[in-house]
Image (cartoon, rainbow over all chains, first blue to last red; front, side, top):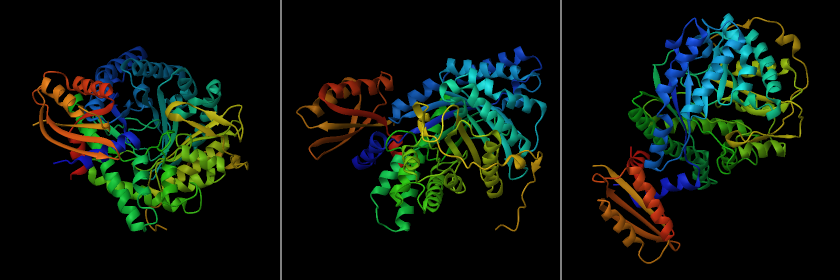
Length: 454
Length: 90
């Protein structure tokens, strides 16, 4: 039988160390909403999502109350809209009308984000894909809760450099379109390589075409819990360090598994996966960078950071895999800058650069995330940064992503405030040298060889 | 059997157990096990209870115990047992 110390440990994690379930994400297939008539598509999308998700928020709150575990976000992911709207949308404005429908239904069912305003263009773009991509700046400016993601590369197909170039332009246009809010639109836009079909985390969640009609995916969190556990083994060997991370990750993930199974049962929707990510928030003590410091670094970004992050990421997976019957999504430590107080401190102290962050993304999920850069950064420079990050994903057979925010009207040394879970960020300098000729070549980078690994 | 864990944490004072037990009795909640310690002057109690015969909604019990805690000056949490079993047992 459970004893008082075990109960106290669990409740301490929840109350003092920010243990929570970060998100219950309901994936909904919209493939059966396809129609050649735009009005009908919008109507079918609204009805399907409303019917499927009407009890999502209430169920999440009920589970949270009964088990005493906070469930921070309730969200929805849908089939990439480029596929759903392709037959009906003849202009970018047509796609924007679908974005508005998604935003409306998200408000009505009470979820704080809806992901899937997406296109999968890792090898090539259909006319519909391109229309959707070109509609992103307007779609993100006129909606509040819609998130967009574009998959521009994969290990199997290589990198679609035409899409990379286009996304550099679209990120800048999105920044311009939302400049009144410090270019907030870019915080809802992710460019992926090897995007997973079952990711519950925003802004990159979409419901892949390989998925069932509806599915429940859960994202756990708990950087504060790992940090506290590690503070008890200061000075011990790597063996002790790694064992501690594994055991903690196991406990955190079990909570996610329980919540996922309960939500699945109560909503009568199959359980998909638990995403084993260490997802930080701007709250003090809920930081992945603080774990790196606890492992032994003065600041995230100091020499040793990539190794520390690699071991952290690997141990979290090793501990978490056994705790859940199905693991998927992104599964790894997130290193967003604006959403992690320790990362912000490291940038302000001068310990962490864009280049070091890029190195860190080689060993963890997901990529260059929530990084504010000067508003005058060129489109091609953003495309170059995207291409670098996509190459890391492609060659290493992992998911990588870029969520950069060129803050219009602001430069290095200034700070941008997004509020809430998105936090705030100091604007980081970008390498000023040009990659115009590289980005403007056009075409695609071929898929990599799958042998002779070195 | 659906088992629930009730924890009470706060500054030690007269009548904490009595008040909590009265509430449980009034709501047909049977106590299966109690353990209690004082850590650094703080009262720390855990009860394992049987909530199979409650007539109220479980969420309401959680809420009412919460309010009872506030009135005594302690924190009372009421959670289904599975969260602890999941975390601490393979």
